Length: 150
Image (cartoon, rainbow, N blue to C red; front, side, top):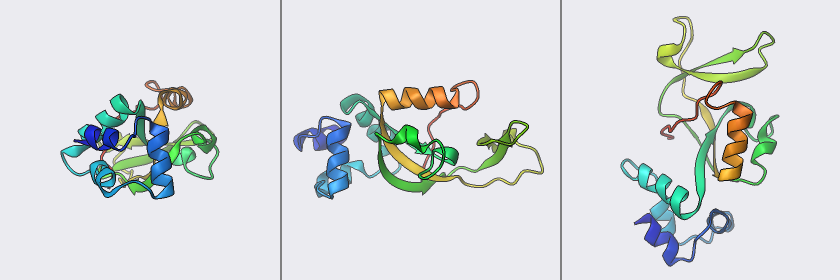
């Protein structure tokens, strides 16, 4: 299991896992255990939450590297880039069109063009997740939910 692979290699925190991944020192067993494929997704997420006290978060828009809100992810570890398997519609909110957000296709206008979201995946701890929820006004303005990433 993922938990066994991580604990047998002494990985008991998100920081320890992030350091191994950054340094390229994660064993093939650990890398294999972390491969998200089909039915393993829930097990990987559960291991991150329960064993490591961490979460995998897909970001897009102003949270991307180099953009205005990326500073909220400074203490987090970027693990990959990807795109959603599901289609969304990107729209700009507020009268000044200041910030982008994704709508479920069924919630969008007929004139909107659905697309996949391109973004970045981070390992974040509870504190960063709470900060992101505050920033994004979850669940009022933005709604955080699980999505499949390709």
